[in-house]
Image (cartoon, rainbow, N blue to C red; front, side, top):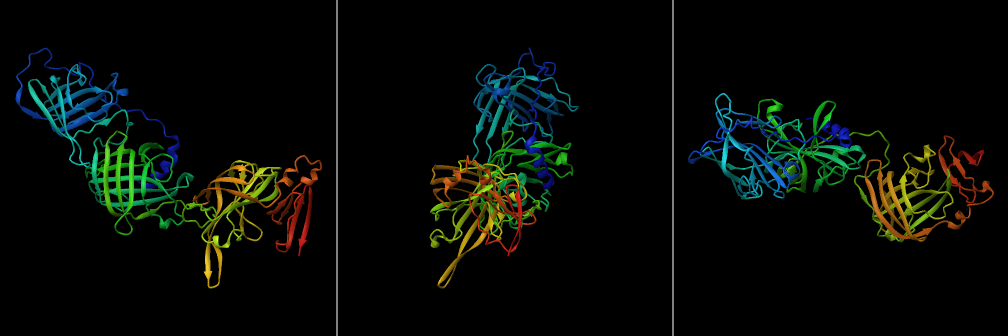
Length: 609
């Protein structure tokens, strides 16, 4: 399936996926269907030569909540001596010719789990078989069964543990019917019929352990659903495949839908080492579970799943089967060869089967399928930023007066001008935040502040407990809510600092709390326009660059004209400065030109020479 279509499906379906009905095995519950030939007849002598049942047609498990018997878990087996015997789950019918088929309906006390318990199942013990629904059927060359015969004396189950973690346990299941002993020996995987949903596509109903992956592909989809994480779908193969990800021979494709970091330059996108666990929240180091969803009348597979090609007829219905991953871990490590990766998977399907395997030194050619946005993003970040304020002694706060009915403060965490010890400025972060508070606030109020949805330059949607987006001031410098990193440059006898990385903040929140008026704590969770995260915690003293009492005193002043803000605009309407009448502002830094000054309802054009 096309990777792009899978992702479109993910975008459409994740939030509105309907619940699907559980698919249950329809048992042959009527005596008119199970006409046991030996009912009421004397038993034959037991045949000393056991008859082999070599094929598991069906292995179904029901937990106690779905078994129909209080406190009991149900194990339903269909075993046959021919490989071409089939069982219809929805109809409860068997198709077979010249074959013996055993139906075994077994029960065990709650708590045994999906693995078949060992011991002897009797008609009335703790381990119990349902005598009405357990029998041996014999089919003739025309596919007609003989009505079935009783099982006598119980069903015995034993288990030989696997020799290694990449192998499966083997079972021996034996019983006697019509004087003949029947034995099945081999692996026995059960499907959790209460755990898996109904499926359009054929399902893999066994464990898949010890897969050895030899090749891989990766498809980078970027920032899906504005999650601010990078989505990458990787395909692991144990057989041949083409450049589009299709299997070209019998084998397995494990498709893993991973979420991790964004790449500012998508051409540099690559796998990120770490341990990934299943989740639906698109967070870093997670992978999305597998499922079927209906998209415009087409059933699509999304998330993490196994696609197995088991035949080469050219038919999707006959060649492929699937299983959908519901839990587990994916571990990615750097390979021994540069540009390669080692991957280990330990997964569980939605029907309770295990999928395990590994691949060593696999190269993953990455195809960029990310959508290229048209928005203008002022950022050169290439990764998330974990803010480092170790060298910063204190924060600084400035009053920007009243703007559009809110009190505006600018807070610097870090210093762009050497106000701290100049020797501490090298390799240092600066986060400047512009807070909007209720008018008349002398101090920055505690609370959670959220970035404005639009730039303040083009909207008047100011409001308390908002952060102003980053913007350029009249001198071309970044201000508002912005991030910068300073790198120290040294020459003999002198040194200075330059900005080597920067970002205008577009979204996110900052939590503000304080122990007293001189000590603030900032919990920072911000994002640039690409979706890179800027985060950290700052908990130090605050230095004031205004008099808080002068702002507090404004409240209740009778002369409202004193509170009217004065604003300076360019002729095209861009706001450059805004202060209330209790403050002054220097205009010497403004370049020569014509400006519009508004104070209350008065508008005056001025010329600065």
